[in-house]
Image 1 (cartoon, rainbow, N blue to C red):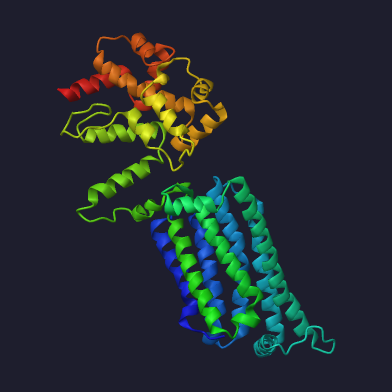
Image 2: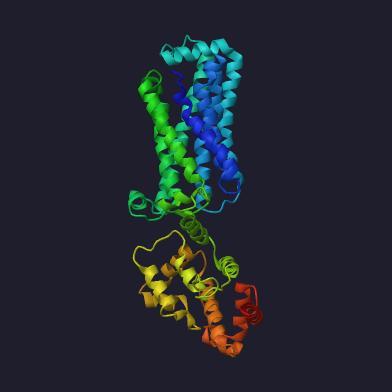
Length: 447
């Protein structure tokens, strides 16, 4: 095999992303398993390309490959698991470690028994096609090495590839993934699951690894063009895999999100627009109390309060309800149901009905309550009752400013709460203050 620097390029790409993720993404839930995946790929490529010319032994290179290559697909499946749902450790997730241990240990023991020179000679004959594993007159140790290293290694990889294919197929069916989603993501500015992007890249990598594994002797061992093409393709795919992995556990992404992937990458002229995109993007990951506190803090820092337009330095801050309803997660409603839902809340203000239920909203939208509940959860990262409470508290803040003499009972009734006590406890949970304390703070801030 020609050991050109181009052949080590995929390994260098993985090493680069391992370092970048160590500095920038060590807090993400996917970091550890993705770091192990990158390092396994790096050491596998080192064994395939660098070890033989550096140490002058093909046998040692094979030990490296047998130790790390069987770990790549299990780690990829674990990475999928982290992206698919919050990871819960189970002992069965560590069973895959037995595969690289078996292949590396059998190769190491048989290499020590046969000797480095004898193993190197055997591997040269195998690559040249001069070794016949069915020859009954051949040395037993050589047959043992062939079956317990090369055949076993290829068998394990083949089994892993079959498992990976089935696992990917199950996830594709369960998550309704398909090429149409990728087309919308690339050409129509529609969101796509991060997991779907990574699955496409990983499947392409697995397919090319299969080609290299099972066509190695006939096409890759002596064919530079094929070897260079696969190395370049692997480099591109590993680069994309590492790039999108920087999104961590973000569920949905837009194509435009790549611009703000590395935060604060702007010029003085584009600072305002890029910062706006960053804040909007990050606010989509907040929900409930945390989103309310952030919006209130931003309003306090700018000298205004949520919903109080024309105050402060002339910059109007939208109301909390308008902000919550327009900052959605990366899940678009293709049927327009989401737009109709916002219309009901922002313009019809049906949340002011004290007895409003999910079934009532579903009836108004002409659909079922299960679909409405799923739409709210996916877009706003909170449940339907919590969203209604946020909208009612925001309306109560404006109502209190316009009706300073209203009692808590009157405010609760006007804002859709069943009772004054329910209004008081919900208001404090969302804003951090009771209605009286909040009113007093706003009055003192306005003087």
